[in-house]
Amino acid sequence: MAGARVLIVEDERALVKVLKFNLEREGYSVASAGDGLAGLAAFQADKPDLVILDLMLPKLDGFEFCKAVRKTSRTPILMLTARKEEVDRVLGLELGADDYVTKPFSVREVLARVKAILRRSRGPAGTEGALRAGSLEVDLERYEVKVAGKLAALSTKEFELLRCLLSAEGKALSRDEILEKVWGYDRALEIDTRTVDQHVARLRDKLGSEARRVVTVKNVGYRLKRD
Ligand code: CA
Image (tube, rainbow, N blue to C red; front, side, top):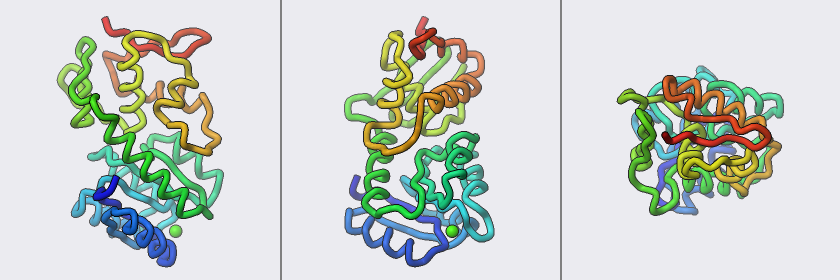
């Protein structure tokens, strides 16, 4: 996705340097910030298409940064974590990070993730427009979900999950199918089907009066009731 703007929020200068060099070589335009507060300022000023975010940062850590960003934006966030234990927090809590890589990582891995996230967040060609079910409106182009006219603040993954269920047109999807569609094939992660359940629970929560549309199909997975 050449031309996309990437913001790196990371206090290890050597790491910023190597990421910046390689991202720019791929055609991305790259800004960076060395602490969480400077990162937030840069986020607001630059409006990046994707943020690469270190968890352990001076002034404002990655968790706080993520929470602050998610109040107003669904811009994809790729987390850099140094410890495996942090991963559950990153994915499990209401932080809204889209993906993560654990340190030490290869630059190639980060580049692959960045590409995949941007591809997913922009969506496949030919899916422009809006999908509707009752008072639920999904605007694929603007990445917006409304319930009874009110915006629902979905994370990128929750949005993808909803889109995936809507596009199945009432058919049930297994957790594995959902994992493939929403999280992609191109990941070497120990993400499992519980992740799907966690995201479904959060999605239902945010859909409020339309939560009933996300139906659990016993021994299979989920489907979206359109009528
Ligand atoms: Ca750090």
